[in-house]
Amino acid sequence: MNSIYFSFKRIFDLLFSLIALLLLSPLFFFIGFGIKISSSGPIFFNSKRIGRDGKTISCLKFRTMNLNTQEMMEDLFKKSPFLKREWDEFQKLKNDPRIFPFGAFLRKTSLDELPQFINVFLGELSLVGPRPYLLDQVETRLGKEKGFYLSIKPGITGLWQVSGRSELTFEQRLDLEKEYIKNMSFSLDLKIILKTILVVIFRKGAY
Image (tube, rainbow, N blue to C red):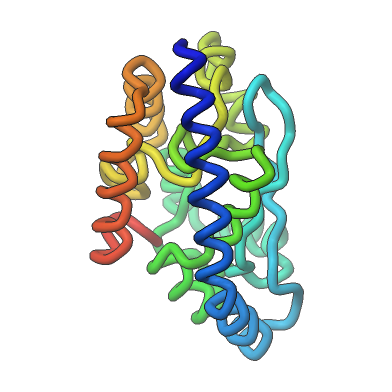
């Protein structure tokens, strides 16, 4: 892969994330206040994900779920095999009872992911790339191509995010991630960033 492209990509990530954090700081305050009055617990959630070359990273998000999520999920799957199948296929639930109302709004508008600009600034994420995987997804879903999917830095947004997102199965997501890695370029990154803006505005595929 082109070293000039990756160097320029890092510079762009650094400048873009710094400007975004400065401009969005007032919004961070209001979102944090909204979370505090909506649900007990911390404002931020550290989601452990797998980054480039299999390194564990902490992806920052605004918290959108109640605190007893593991117990709720286990109880939910026992009562409803249909929801268990939905989770296995999409790795998400369309109507997730663990999410409190203000959190649902943050997810629908993708505002919950704004703190990940901090991860981009620190160099743990890129603006554009495959979305970072959970550990169990790496171990059970990536198969023999694990090294390929983890060969580049994951991103805040990517081809999957602008091509259907949660409406696609996990296998369809992997096909899109593979397509991006094989064809990545700065022009493709810019195209995805512009499409991401439209997706966020029209709230397509987010829940």
